[in-house]
Length: 208
Image (cartoon, rainbow, N blue to C red; front, side, top):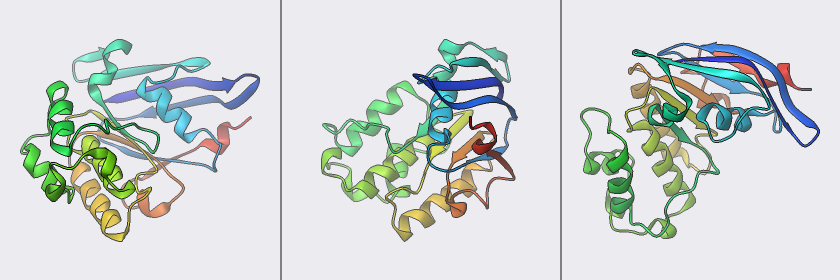
């Protein structure tokens, strides 16, 4: 998916978070979104995903079939963020079954393969509310990695992950880079993106 960010700006009350942001995200490329806390990284991801509207500017989405309407964008996007909510009353198996009723899995995967890959096979019947923070983070990432998506948005992807979880994340990112997905990683931790992203968007350039 190509994503054209055109003079985007966002403010809360009278405070501008960022302003005048224009950038072209190209199909199959990976980008790191950098900047200090409060610079607008998470806010920009939410705007691109459609969860929030910009205060000014436009976003144009283009897939293989041409322009994608704003109301259809969610079908092409996967996102994993620290503030993303999981359905805690579901077991892991129920959560995955529910999610993939509405979205398509990446080719070659099944529910069992996904659970095994994200090191959660033994927790298939465990309720999400009883997961550790690291287990929840691996599930959030798995939903992004294994959902057929044209645009993958990751915010602080190794938050709450231990060394094993971080190694798992990096290996999955290597696999994701082999797909045609456009990837945007918001992070201040170089190990989360330096191997995968050749282009950086510094939010401090758009800070007002």
